[in-house]
Amino acid sequence: MTAVLDAPAPARPPLRRVRARWAWGLGTVVVVGWSLAGAGLFSGDVLNPAGRVQFGRFAGAALSPALDPAFLQVLAASVLVTVAYAVLGATLAVLLGALGAVLVARTTWGRRRLGWTLARGLLAVPRGLHEAVWGLLLVNVLGLDPWVGVLAIGLPYGAVTAKVFADLLDEVPRASHDALLAAGAGRVPAVLYGLLPPASGGLLSYSFYRLECAVRSAVVLGLIGAGGLGYQLSLSFSSLRWEQVWSCVYALAALCLLADVGGRAVRRRLAAPHTPGDRLARDRVLTAAVLTTLALVAWSWWYLAITPATLLTDRTRQQLTYVLGAAWPPDTDGDLVRSIGSRAVDTVQMSVIAIAVATAGAVLLAGAAARPAGRTGPGRRLTGALVRIGLLLLRAVPPPVWALVLLFVLLPGVLPGALALGVYTLGVLGRLAAEATEELDPRPRAALAALGAGPAAGWLYGVLPGATGPVLAFALYRWEVAVRDSVLVGLLGAGGLGALLASRVGAFDWAAVTSVLVAMVLLTLAVDLVGARARAALR
Image 1 (cartoon, helix red, strand yellow):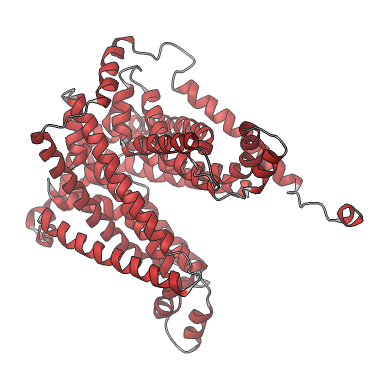
Image 2 (image 1 turned 135 degrees about the vertical axis):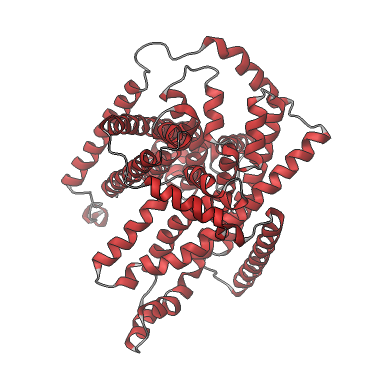
């Protein structure tokens, strides 16, 4: 008993950090309330009674998707186009990320912080613009060419991949790197041969994750005319053929599930092996994954009939020269600046509501979606499977489609776009929250159950305290993504900076387009900074 009484008390966070957390919490409540008020939730009507019948038809068609051979043939061709775009876009992103990581890694620059800061700042420009924005801009330069979809995925994803790859390189042991520098090697060779081999597992794991994301981005680009599954989904929706819409949704969900399962299997095999048998299995899986990826790249290149000559034609050079010349200097007209400020506020409010909805839903569903560690009954397994399938469907359908669905029951404005982003983000955040719950220590919940606590009490006191930190951190990361995705919803008329950008591009007002793009990048940087500070307060 004396040993127990004399044991040191668990460490507590400093009082200043506790106050900071309370300040962030109260600030979050205020910002969410401000966003809801700005969306008109507390003033006036937001419901659209006239759309209830059409929404009922849409929901009822979920049980009877279109299965006629002619449409299934068109659907299969659309799926192949989407896969080809995703594979080539992800491959380009990994290549650009590998090259960019060496240039922006802290290790490469050493103590030259100014050069490192400028190099990281350059990544903010392609990273701050959504793939749909890149697609919209590239169409005006390249026309309806397959390069539009590939570059629209590869350029922003390449910037994101370069940042992640650089962080992975900076976190590996530096002994080999320092030895090469001491032997007279340059900084770039030292990074390539001293840091790259030990970081290869994490680099490959993230590369396959990028492929999963590229599938969803390829669908989004289809919604703005790049072809593939997204384009077919848009056609079916605009013609009110709900059976075809659900066939597209189910095909998209199956494609996302296939990419998700395949990527997760590869990432698990790339985890640090413990036995020679594990190493052998890992090497086999890795070899099969790499060979399959190379085969898919070759097939995608052939299927889309891509040629580098398209990027070097006289028309492309002339159009690029014209667009760049017309886009600079940016338009600084007072009315435009005020409009950008107003639309930026709408974008922030849209993203805040989306993350609030997604976080609340993820907390409620994480326990049911998590795969239990021990033996459970068939009812629990069935419930978990249904919740995971539901989350998969939520994240498989692009936010613009959710926005169009919600416009059946809501009046146009910020709220439908915000809820559409929230529903989509719930599918992503719910999965992340479930995985975080699965990784928690099961002993506190088991101890509560042994003392007679019910499932609800075990969840509230044995799981929720440990899952709160990771879930909030994931939510802050997704907030940064939601700001970019809100631009996508705005491109299709839901308001915000995306709607302003679409109108300026449609009018060929390239100077105003530059001003809107600068605002998008600055807004993304500001949200990144706020999110980083909030995550630091949670640690």
